Image (tube, rainbow, N blue to C red; front, side, top):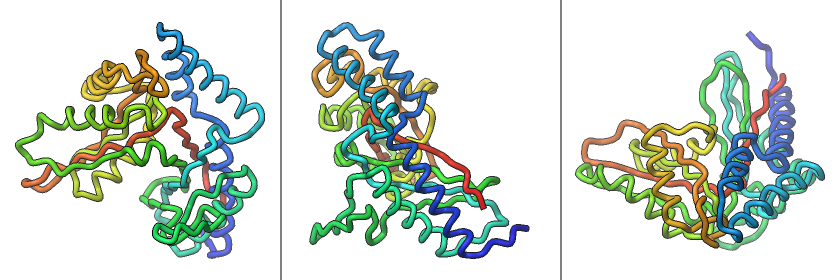
Length: 278
């Protein structure tokens, strides 16, 4: 058993949060970069190819200069796996807030978090109920950050379909991408949650965005192909690649319900995982 004080927890979580954000904001995961490189190699439309080239140049420059990949550095969404011998106390979420505040100054991050009604800006990317922290059991004390920009978040959708509308699930997902058009800065990644409850489906869709995108099952690939056939293309300017990947997570649901959520992610699919060292 670990002997862990709240002070140790606070410091360790704060350091891990800061480190993970510094990585995520300046370095795109290899699977995402590889997907963008593949899209660039296969693109035949000159404008679309130029846009993909600019994206790849931007990624390389961000890593070289250790500056944010995008001016919208997002809002921090945090996923923590907590081993059974580590106590869950308020010090964990307090450590996350401290780490976010420190990263906002060190990276730096654009202060995006505001009061929903007054629009007052905290200046720290923290606020009431923010950052979002999800804690699940695990074997290792790990912390993952998913900075989520507003352009793609704003065009995400959820629907409470009827059980008789199972055949409409795929259509709803593709229509969501169609309605989004160029607003989420495609190429996009679609995180999809099917089942559960209203809130559970949305969480599954968000969680799906943590999955590597170098492999898709048949259903995911079909949807990805459907979206690419829309011809929206990079930055909405036309082309072969509108969607880099689709990742789906499911959960059991009520016999009278069929929740479906689509959380859209732009090409800057930032995520990073670090181990929390006590």
